[in-house]
Amino acid sequence: MDFEKKNRRQSLKVIISEAIMVLVVIIMVTVLAFIVSGYWLNADFEVKRQGMLQISSVPTGADVIIDGESSWLQRTNTSRVLDSGEHTITLKKDGYDSWSKTINISEGLLYRIHYPRLFLQNRSPEKLLSTTKISSATISPDYETLLLINNTTEWSIINLLDENLSPKKFNIAGIFSNTSLENGSKVGLFNGEIVSVEWSLDGSRALFKVRSGEVEEWAILDFNNPKNSINLTKEFGVSFNDLKIFDRSANTLLAVQNRNLHKIDVPGRQVSAILVENIRSFDFYNNEIFFVARSEDYYLGKIKLGDSKIQTLSTLTASQKVLVTKFYEERLIIMLDNSTVTLHDMDDFTKLSSYQLSFLPDIMKVGTNGEFIILRAGQTLATIDLEANLMREWSVESPNLGWLDNNMIYTVLDGDLIVYDFDGLNRRVIAKNVASHFPVSITDNRFMYYFSDDYLVREWLIPR
Image 1 (spheres, rainbow, N blue to C red):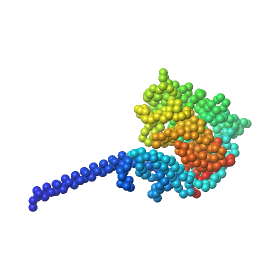
Image 2 (image 1 turned 180 degrees about the horizontal axis):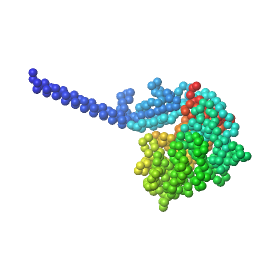
Image 3 (image 1 turned 135 degrees about the horizontal axis):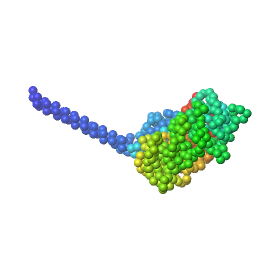
Image 4 (image 1 turned 180 degrees about the vertical axis):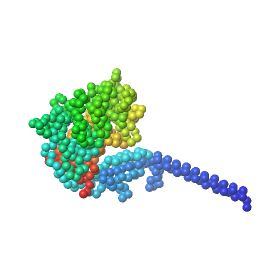
């Protein structure tokens, strides 16, 4: 047997096999690279550059109709490859209303739509609780706790996930200066005007700003332990210009007093030394505080809580309002200068984009997940959709404006409850005879609560 000849043949086979394997790997990597770049074969075997749509809805399982065409394979809470360009997406589900939006798919990019909500039709309102003695109400950020306010010192807290909806009394006597007790009574009168309310993220506390005549007071209400409630103005003997809750449970606050920024330790009843002087606007991300202040000129600065070193990020020609957020992996600084909005990278302050408004906003808010920015002046709004990189100006019919959930805005006009997506699209009237001076909310994606005919009303948003 010619062993040498046999070994040569075997070596040749190995070389050919390895060459084929390398070639296959190269082809696969090349194909994957083209796919990642957005290239795809369509039904006619033509090479098209495409993007991907990822869409979900509440409730799940809605039919997805793309450019008027549907398939039984297309449902929400899924992904779909689409040709780049403009597409009209419509969601439908039996027994519910519909939702629609025209979007632009970019080559090789993922477009996420996670906020569509379809409303169950033919809902039946349930009157749950008489509110004849209630003057106003406020609801927690998770839409699970409702505080009912009246002109006495005895308010009520309701857990909206509790089937019995039993109000729990909360006495504010002694917390605010503008309350009075007569003849040793435990229940007196509340004479103040509530200017603003900010809840802690866990819903355990709320920061109130109350006005009585020319006097303003700030107080923290502790709903789990009312004895730990504190009138901050009386406790520290100063008038605060602004206060913000810094942590999840409102144990730490950031306060502006005489244009100087301080930290407040609520449980320890302590105010820190000045963190930043001559401050104009501030916001924070984790333990980093971003602010606009003035020395000789205006400047944008950053300071870490617990560290006294101030870092100057940029000089400014005028005072601007600053907000910070995170959009997926991007950490953003949002600057408002009159009617111009600019977005910057949080790490090096590189300018990323700029938007010009046709009005001067006095309110600026960032979406819960950082995916949009809302700017408002009265009934005029502008939405900057960071997912679509678009700005849209729009208006509402009534100044009574609120958030139905984290992505939907509502207003009440002549008793009609009107809802919009955060960008003003998909306007729908979803309830009648709704009180405009009380909040409306969606809780646990199952219930909608509103006030009507002196009652707290509940509607089921899913079939019972």
